[in-house]
Amino acid sequence: MGKLTLYGIDGSPPVRSVLLTLNALGLDFEYKVVNLMTGEHLKPEYLKINPLHTVPTLADDGFFINDSHAINAYLVSKYGKDDSLYPKDLQKRAIVDQRLHYDSSVLIGTGRALTTPLREGKTEIPRARFDALEEAYKTLDLFLESNDFLAGKELTIADFHIIAGLSTIMLIHDVDATKYPKLASWLQRIRKLPYYEEANGSRLSTIVDFVKSKKFTIV
Image (tube, rainbow, N blue to C red; front, side, top):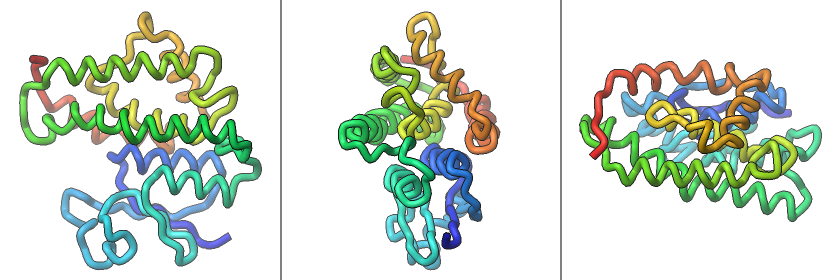
């Protein structure tokens, strides 16, 4: 196996999704922090490996890939002892892919709509943005109607992506277990994974501090 290096920052949900995958696969890797606040992602040496100047970026023995969804699919396909985290069966994979696209097309944007005003120093957030998050919670609860995990009976990279994002968004607007019992149970299930704290839970501290420092009104 070549040397794996992950470039990222703990505050990024996509980065934490890759950390979850790397830990689930039991892979050795080097983690290099890219400080977005000081512009490290805009330096020539980083732009050389990721012209889009985003995180995460994965380096695998001279091969560079960015976008967490692509990275996690690559890691499981190349290094997984089996295909359970990203199934080879086309129908099972299609469901995982649908959840991944839901994450990238809906959840990420829904989360940013809530966090961006706080980063910009604004004190008011439109109620419609919270309503959109409630709709997302409702959809995720529906995904879990017949299964323990978001894409079926087994844990997949879809679960990693969505827990990484939700664990951030929930700091602003938590999941109501009485309204979304399946989703609440899933959250507890994922938090019990032996590598969850190392890969995601313990890395939320800076975000927790940031959210606590902000006061906002729903308008």
